[in-house]
Image 1 (cartoon, rainbow, N blue to C red):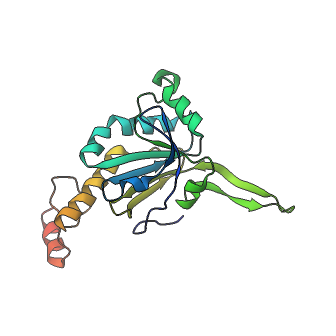
Image 2: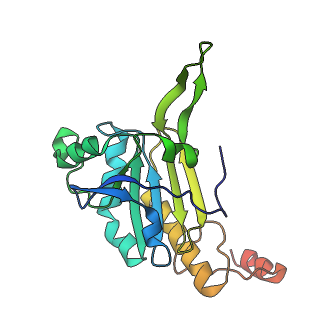
Image 3: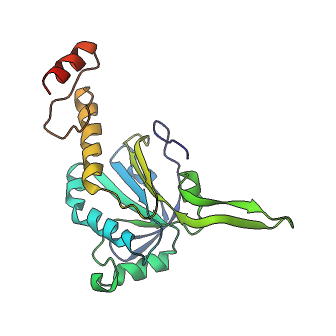
Length: 210
C-alpha cells in the first residue's frame, strides 16, 4: 500500500455527480488548489450496506467541513448513472438522497489505482489476455489534501470497517492549527487543547502536566 502523505495528490479528470443530481464531466479536485482543503474519500460501491452510513454521516456534518474551508469529495468505481440513481433513492430504501457533495465515478478504476486503494490488480493470463485479480472495488481510503495539493493525512480501512467523521474533523483541526501556529499536536489532541513546540523542554512540560 502506497504512502501518499507528503506527496502531491494524484490528479484526475472524471465524471461526477454534484449537488445531489447534476452530472459534471471532467471533474477534478485541482479546481480547489490554492482555495480549499480537500477531504477525498473512496468507498467500495453504491447500494451497499456500510457505505450509505458513511456518505450520510459526512453529509450530516458537511457544515463543519465548510466552516473549516474543506471540500468533501467521494469516489467509487460505479458509473455516474449508478451514483445518480443512488442519490435519488430514499434513505428507507437504502439510498443516500440528500447528499450534496460531489461523488466521482471511477469506472476505469484508474483513480483507485493511482491512490493505491483498489482491492486487486490487473494481470495477464497465459493467453496474454488482461484479467483482474481480486475485488474490483476500492477500499475505504481517505485523504486529507492541503491547499497546495499535498496529502497530509491518509487512512485505508478494509471494506467492512466504517470510518469516523469525528476523527477526520480532528485531523483537519490539527493540520490547520499546526499551519496557523507552528505548534505540533500530541496524542488525542482536540481543538482548544494545548499543543507543543518542537523542543525537548516543550515535550517534558506537556507530559508533566498530564
